[in-house]
Image 1 (cartoon, rainbow, N blue to C red):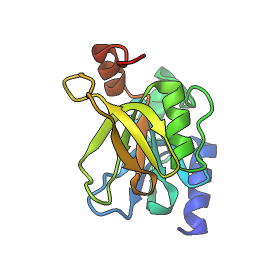
Image 2 (cartoon, rainbow, N blue to C red; image 1 turned 30 degrees about the vertical axis):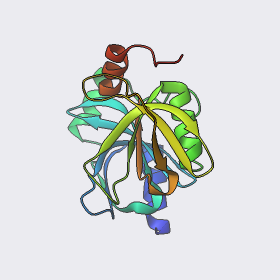
Image 3 (cartoon, helix red, strand yellow; image 1 turned 135 degrees about the horizontal axis):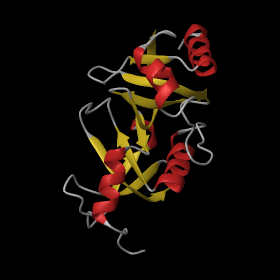
Length: 185
């Protein structure tokens, strides 16, 4: 990744500009929102769709190939300045962007459920669950299915394969509320 991309990320964060971030992963979605931080291996974005902020998306910084700035007169930014939280709020607690393990642990610690993507192999799959274990090379999630039911077994994901981690959005909050407390707690 170029120094230019890192500079654009820093500028977007400093100036609270809405951006669309494009990545090098074939089939992976672009991410739209406000850059919160770009430190370590990961970039944290307050996701924004349909003029509403909705949780946070952390993506590997090295995957970023292009950043489109929406500008100061962007309708979404103008709306949020007058009607929504402004500037876009940071996440609850400290979220570490050092590496995938630290990111997953800190996001799960503050939000409960996290969404994990392995877009290199399957760009359309999202796995949502509670962090059950975070060992040296893998994390284990106790997943919640789309019907808001807890899985019976933990699923293992290699940190090296994780390309994106989402947390704090309305969908995950709904799943958590409907699924109830995590089994075994």
